[in-house]
Image (cartoon, rainbow, N blue to C red; front, side, top):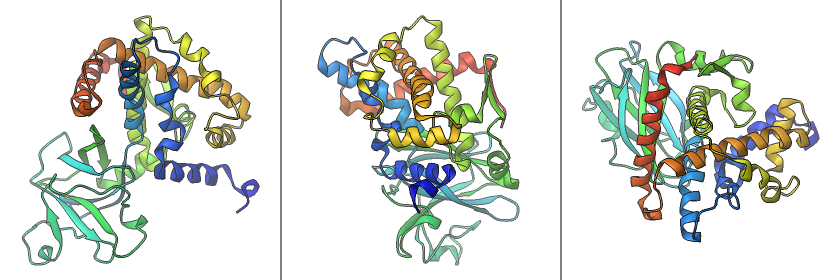
Length: 352
């Protein structure tokens, strides 16, 4: 299809797919460079470490490597399978699985199968039918990088994965904690009564999806800055709220990002920023020119990233860690964000 004939929706989807294949080529992967020239750290080694940790941390969080496609259950929603694909660039390890209000399910396994065999929904992993399938304990087998969920695999013999959960009562949602590139992620997949579908397809761009300290956030506010696939709306809303919380906290402490904003045109000149396709697709979506998108929305991205990065760097002493200690760093940053969330929780309302 000629580029001129492609609709904005088709072009956005092509951009999203390209981004999933190569996260570092898009705006989501550019932030290690966003703050170069703006931070005044002493020593190149410390600067690089801070940029890796502060600059890339939340953006890697936003570019979650797992995709969830196949979601199926028995009639009473007490046995559920969730097909998982890894579009990241390193293997993923499932760390923990819980259900509903973070309850421990009766049993949980990882199904490792092929497209030709598919998955099975069962309430007995030792049953005769289930024994024909490969069930492993959570955490025993990594989900390989570059693997897709069942409906996107390229060959019928491609390896596919699914989290299988059995519980004594109806499963409304499944919480999956996993590790990728030394970072810990938490995703929630909605299961019963079509909750996931309702949450995603019923939301319109102009709908208010969250309120943070009295500030209303619409789905369009998020989509103006990030790719948001319909199936990922609930996840992206939660992560955007987390980012908004950190931006507000940074502003309240008087953090100044003027140097970062002044460096924007030098680091990312329009026409040679490496993000031109992204700008064009986003401008089409918003009905504005590329130049207008660059001046308003890309500048907002730089500003938000700078607030988050400088807040993390101000609150945590990261200079004592090496790049081989990402898991320790990740835990420290997660603890900081969790503590901040507790402080802001009464001022946060997610409306999905």
